[in-house]
Image 1 (tube, rainbow, N blue to C red):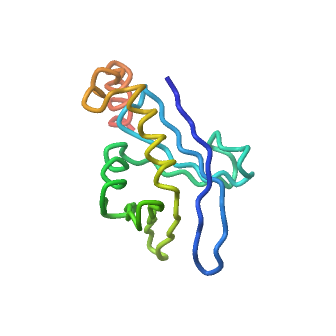
Image 2: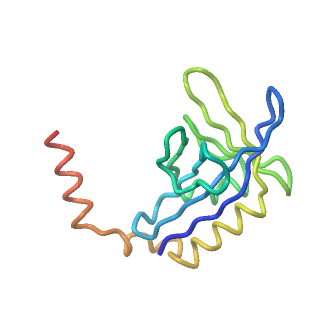
Image 3: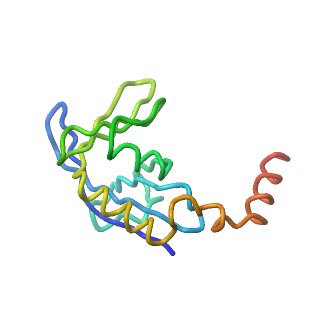
Length: 140
């Protein structure tokens, strides 16, 4: 089962602007959520388009981030209040902050939980494909 939810993220600096954001979840990759910022606007959002920016993050990390500060390294979540959650993207050039509606993020996560109950992800992993991919990448 695949779930996608389109929405928007506010980039507050240097001049606040709203950019499209699509949250994607695929039960065949049950531990991850993909955050797509499509270059071609809100209707794009399938990911992989030229100029698109995508971040693959742990679904468990998103759950933690709607309850309190979570993450380390290149991706962090910071709840600002009951209404907004900050998504921090770190790279060697600096930090980008996007603000999303916490209710939208929670709604998306509930939909993923309906698809794959947290704690049962291991039952949805296609182990033969995963092992083959790991062995193939080890030989590269």
